[in-house]
Image 1: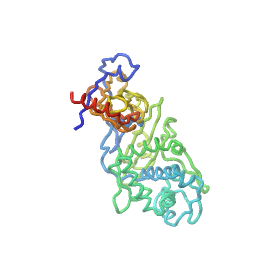
Image 2 (image 1 turned 60 degrees about the horizontal axis):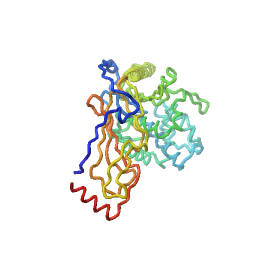
Image 3 (image 1 turned 90 degrees about the vertical axis):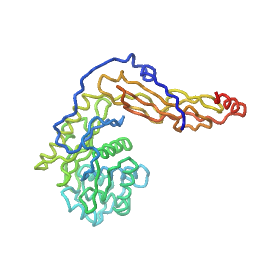
Image 4 (image 1 turned 90 degrees about the horizontal axis):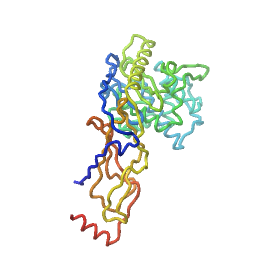
Amino acid sequence: MIQRILLSLICLLLIAPLGQALAQSTVRVPPPSDLESRNYLIMDHLSGMVLAERAADERVEPASLTKLMTAYLVFQEIERGTISLDDEVRISERAWRTGMQGASRMFIEVNNRVRLQDLLRGLIIQSGNDASVALAEHVGGTEGAFVDLMNAQARALGMVNTHFTNSHGLPTEEAQYTSARDMALLASALIRDFPQHYGYYSERNFTFNGITQSNRNLLLWRDSQVDGLKTGWTRTSGYNLVSSREQEGMRLVAVVMGIDAPSHQQGGIKRANESQALYSWGFRQFETHRLYEAGAALTDARVWKGATDRVPMGLSEDLYVTVPRGRYRDMQAQMELDASLEAPVQAGEVYGEVQLILDGEILSRRPLVALESVETGGIFRRLLDSVLQMF
């Protein structure tokens, strides 16, 4: 077992310039307890910290939230250069018939050619089931092959309670499911990985084939700081909403699922109200800070038998932390480094961990990586260090 050197440093040393830690006994307001959502989760996008949740890992029907993954894969292929926003996509009978099965459709016609960019808007703004199939067939050849890609991508994103059976979310004989936590992970990945395409989710209306349809996310009309993402509903899933709101550089992602309502109008209002309640609570109670920049040296580690005896250690990604408001100065940072670090050392390899601690609880932990490579030293250095290691 690799020995570790434990370095416990207060935030004064690691999170400069914070000043002295302040002792506080602020009473925290709990999350809203009267929400009707059977499942919900609210998390900070940058730090990944979950602020509140209810049955967030329960497997539930995704409904049209499925289209978030459909869009993710289309964006991915655009960035890879395999498809283009200007592609003319032929509409199959299967895509057209799928549009006829539910209330959500783009009104595309069989054998017509439609610009891929228009299909994306039909998918995101109008929630078109027909647009979903047309895009799936354009990317995967068949919808079945595309669904395989969807499930593979879900696994890659850590969506452990998700299984898709189609590209649009309409019920099928084979069970398809997701969870509030998995939908939050997917929404955050969309925002992080495709900022150049994320603007589609804030568009309120889209007109195609002479028919104008409005985005069903009521928050886009209520709150200018909300910029996405997707609604969903079936009789068995209830009313769902995945959304995101940014305020003063802090972005939260909220998922509410399984809301019952007697009408589409009331269901849309309820899911918007419950999301707003979570945002109001989350932004009032928490704050997010970037502590360390990727590539910045946080410390250095002793290297045995190397061309040099020290190597700078840092993070491969920016490190953000979310804490209760007023408690940022109370954090402690702690690092663990490999004690038996021997050359050769490869830049980017993990050789330790940094932990952020508040009131004895670990808020975040990230791997420490070598920022430079260290080659094996000469024979004299190796012999000397072998002797020193004995003692």
